[in-house]
Length: 289
Image (cartoon, rainbow, N blue to C red; front, side):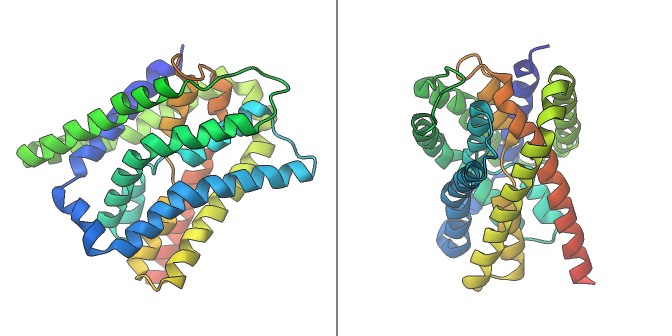
């Protein structure tokens, strides 16, 4: 089974569901409270790729070299926008859900342009000794517009003109999202079981370090700028939770990389990310008692 036929509808539904939760006032938040929005976007769009590249460089100095395809996969995750599940995690952590929705929507739009630029730089910087692979930037931009901008826009329009219907559809989709992602991970695991088991220790460690470093940066930035507790919790989650489904789609797409090995870091990242952020939600609940 080609994974792309599973991840494409999942990503489309996730983006449509994100659009269903968007309201015009969510974008007004940028003007009303620019500081947490700017901090969140800087963390996601600039700091996260820099931290990921720094970790890769650091590992190479200790002769802990990852394969070229895995490096591409790690950077692809780091360049992706915030994941739509971050809104749920922000709610569970008693964070600022409106801020979370705004950051997810804004990062989904901004990364349409930053992701191709950063990945083009990554492809030029990597020494291709073991593989030959190209990045068709035009195809990447078109695919992201079709799979992200269009469904988000449709969901947004439905929410504006049919708010009650949008709420009902959202209640259904939010129950489908997690089982769908579990299905994707399960299928992917069985297709690439040997590679995942062999590389899990190195990739798992890399992803744990990446998630802890980025969430830690989110917490430090929020503390330095004296943001509220709710805003801080949201930034920790938003900067730490990227759209793994989009990274998998780009990796597996016949129009772009067409290589499922590149998607393996995103699969492992999704697993580690959910475990770490669930632990973080648990810590916030203890703090509230």
